[in-house]
Length: 285
Image: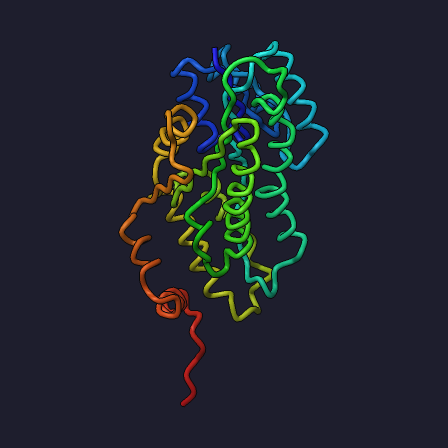
């Protein structure tokens, strides 16, 4: 039985990937941050699912989980690592508390590095592992190639994931370990539904406040109208199992809009977005 590790398995894309891989005969190790989520997933997903209790920013906890997985593999190579865990931080960059920006980067960029370092030996970087070398799937975003105002921390993190993945893919050729990016557009996941919890009170006196209210409403809209997480899971499983997967697989609800946004001159796109959010400077009488 092939085995896969998925970070951030409690909800959304990670949960959908776990369910689909289990139906395809895989054993899944899925990370969660809360013991109650671990118990819930055990009950919902069955005996072929093993919860791993760690936060991706906790290096010691991730290494301990990797040892647990190594023992369960009993010498067989891990078939895949899906670096999925992530958050989205919103706010005007010139006013955002640096601690919030750091947290965004720690979870979305440093977290995948910690997980990759811990599990790469099991994927085949350790020559003692038996069987076919595994693959790493990095969950990026269309924001990995676009920069949205008031979501700069999230866009920055996903741009970083793109560069990280490109470099890592070329490094791990040494061991026969492939690295594939799956870059979704808006997905119906809690990452956007949590927009309602964003506290805008610190920005009430900010000139960005009206635009922030629009961004929060837009994020809540995405939570209802985005792609089903199951659609992304299908692409992740393909990335793990296809004989010759693409190095980057982008899936957007409206691919034509994504193409137009990249084809138009940047200054034109800037003005379109700014007009929608009310970020154009007031005209003088």
